[in-house]
Length: 351
Image (cartoon, rainbow, N blue to C red):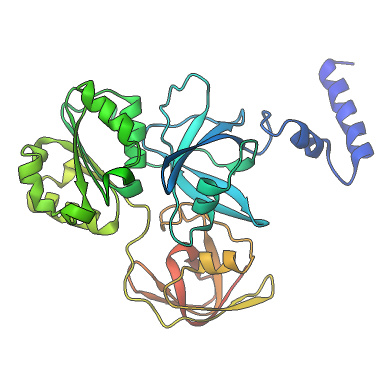
């Protein structure tokens, strides 16, 4: 008998002995990051960056395929007994020698996962992982001149780029309320000291919000630079209008963490028919968040309306697309994206 046949027979015997659990269930307890297991990661350290931001060091399982600088990863975290999924930019370089990856998280008001990771996550905690994804990345051919335009936590994907590739001519314009709120500030100033970066900080508490027209003064050759911009919707909307107005929109690449929101709908009673739960919802909260808050297991992905990982049948009622204001009414076969849809009256979601 061949060794493969012996292994197969031994595995079947183990299945008989361990039923109703499978041998893989026990292996997951002993070696959760092993090859062949569901992709997981283990938190190995949490390093504070500012008062409300921290870098989380993760050792991914053997199924991890790596990432490209600027991409993000979805992680599943158990918070108060409920598994919640969120997407975070990867801030480590692609060639980190120890094989770890990092995400840098800014705690936001009422953000269950972000506050948990920044303030409560402990080394040794296992999390679920998806493979890295996203197209907010650098081109194969290195640009001669680069501009990074960021604000707040929008600096995180750009930091992954800065750590990965050294450019001959790179400028960063970064906005934060105060100097102490600039994530990675010490490292950025080290790059400035080594003449690997020209950094322009805009402290909005004292300087006010950045007027995009000031780029003519701050970075006179901005229109000649390949630009990557990430931050609040207002900044990105202004940048897209500015670049288009000067006919150089092809040189602008943007990453939005949240969809643009239009006027909210009326809200209403939301029924999750598969689980029998019914809750009241306003017209501004995505149904994905409503379901998670109610303890319903909700599929999700990017949470921005891009990946369609949250698509769910709408059995009854109507919902409003938070990006466009468009109303979708239930009819046979209608699917909605729960991450960008809110209740527009009573509705029934098949979850």
